[in-house]
Length: 188
Image 1 (cartoon, rainbow, N blue to C red):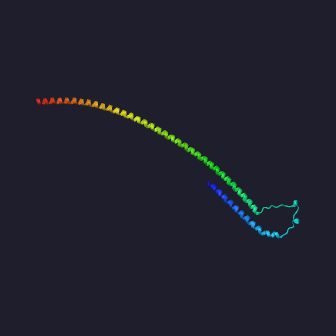
Image 2 (cartoon, one colour; image 1 turned 120 degrees about the vertical axis):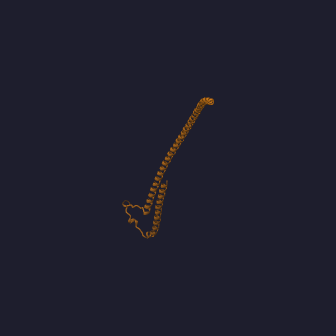
């Protein structure tokens, strides 16, 4: 957009400079024309003798330097206007292209954001189910471990009772053996 504005200002500056030059040229040529008006008033022309018949006359263009400069300025201004129109048209096309691209990018970003949100929700749900499954597995494992610990405690208690009973029996036998030996020794 800045480039277009620079071009427009440049063309306007050129057109202004050309118009100013034409204005000064016309003003100067008008002033010079007033100085020479007196010179022509004094002379008397015999037009009847000087002029040829109408069919034999050659016509000369009456374009003066000022008219040529005015035509040049007009052409320059017309060309500058056409360039400005072309530049504005190009700028409009560029703006439309940028707008379309911006809409495409916006739509793509929106779609990607929606996809990312959906993926995040799916991951959240997956993690939630995994945690729930792990929780259930841990509960089952804890229950199994408690049952095994209880079974182990019962087995240890039973084994301890048997061992104590066996030790008690051996201790009683040993005590009787000691009593008998003490009796034997005391009898002797």
